[in-house]
Image 1 (tube, helix red, strand yellow):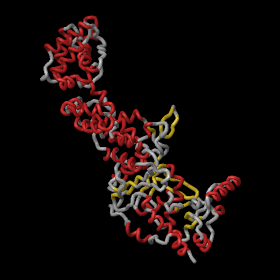
Image 2 (spheres, rainbow, N blue to C red):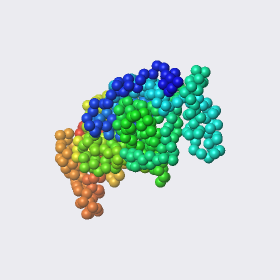
Image 3 (cartoon, rainbow, N blue to C red):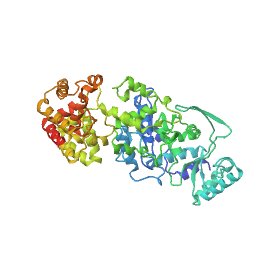
Image 4 (cartoon, rainbow, N blue to C red):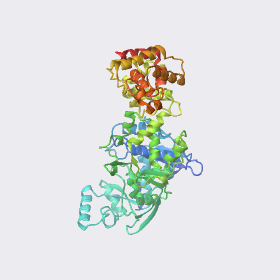
Length: 550
C-alpha cells in the first residue's frame, strides 16, 4: 500500500486538483494589476480596523485597475454570530468600500472564483489535502485531545517549545498500513501537514509594510483539516488565495508570525506565493500611552458607531486614508477639491507601529467634507440618516422640502462655506431655530451681550423692521442699512470708530447686529445673518422680533 491508497481511503470522492486549477484560471488582467481581498470572519461586530484594512485593500487594487473581492472566512463556526456576514457586507457598502466580486448581503456570490464563503468550499480543501497526502506531505493524526494535553505537559516540564513537531509529532511516522488499519477500525482523526522545516534554520522575507524580516523556519506539523472536515485558517488561506489568484495579501500584523508557515505551504503545494503586507493596528492615545482601539472600552471601535452618529462615509474614508499614508494630508492641502481616488496611495508608506486614531481630527475632516456638499446632497444624506435614527428630524425635512433645502443651503457654495456640521446628528441642533414651531415651543434665553437695556433692544428691532428691512436688498445694501440704523440710534457705524473713541458711542454696529441675530435665532453664533433673513422672510422675522420685544 502507498500514499495514494491512504488518500483514496480518506477522501474517496475528492476530485483531482487539476479540475480546480482549470476551473479557476489566471485572471485576465493587464500587467501590474493587483488582486486583493478583504477576508473577515463573521464572529463579532465590524471593527473600524477591519474597515481600515478593507479600504487599504480596495484602494491598492483599484488604482492598478485590478480586482478587490470579499471572502468570508467562516470555518470557525462555533464563534460565528447571527447576521455576522450581513453586518460585514452592509458596513463595507455603507462606507463606500463594497466589493463588486465576492459575498453579498443576501449571502450570495458574485464572481467566477467562488464560492466566496469558506464553509462552502469543503470539497476544494479536501481535494488539495488529498493531493498533499498522495505526495507524502500530509498525514492523518489520531491523537486525542487528552494525548495532546499530555504532550504539552511534558514540553512544559522539559521547558521546550510547545507544539506538534519533531519527536513530539507522535503520528508523523506511522506507516500507511497502520494509518489505514486505524481508519478502518473507526478511530477518529484529523489531517496534519508534514513540515519539512527546521527551527534552527532562518528564512528572510520582505513584507511590503514591515520591510525585511527574518524568522525561524516553520517546523510545526499544523492541522490542515479539522475533525469536522473543514480546514484551518492556514490551509484555507493558501488554497483560496492561490485559486482566487490573489497577488497581494493585506491583513492585520497579528498574522506576521504565520508567514514562515504560509510560505512553506505555498512552496510545498507548488504554488507561487502572493506578496504580503501586514497592517499595524489602529492605536489610541490613552493618557499619554498608546494602546489598541478596544471593542470593550471605545465606542468608536465599532463601525456601526459612525453610522449611528451620522459621519458621512466619504469623511470616514478620507480620515482613514489620512492615517494610512502620512503624505495624504499634504496632498489634500494641495488638491482641496480632488477626489480621494486620485491620491497616489502607497503600501510602503504605512506606519510600521500603528496609526494613532483621533476622533477630534476625524470630525474636523468630516466638517470640511460636509462643507463641500451641495444643499441637495446634505438634504439627501441627512434624510437617509434621519429615517434610521431621528423621526422628528425626518418629519422636519419632509414637511417642506423646498424650505429645508434653503435652510441647508445657507453659506454653501461660498469661498468659505460653513463648517458647523461634523455629523448628521448635529443637523437638528443647527437648524431647529429656522423652524417656527421648534423656535416658539422653546422658552428662549436672549443673551444680547453688550446692548442689554430692554428699551434699546426694542427700539433697534422696531426701527429695523419698520424702516430698514427689504427682501430685495443685496448683501452690501443690507449691511449698509444696518450701519445707517446704528448711526441713527447713536451707535458707531464702524467698529474702528468705536475703538478710537469709545466714550462717544453707546456701542458699535457689531453689537447692533448681535441684537438682530439674537432676536432672530436666540443665538449669538450662527451662519451668515443675511442668508438667514433671506430664508426666513419678512413675516417670520417680524413675528420673531415681536416675541423678543415681549
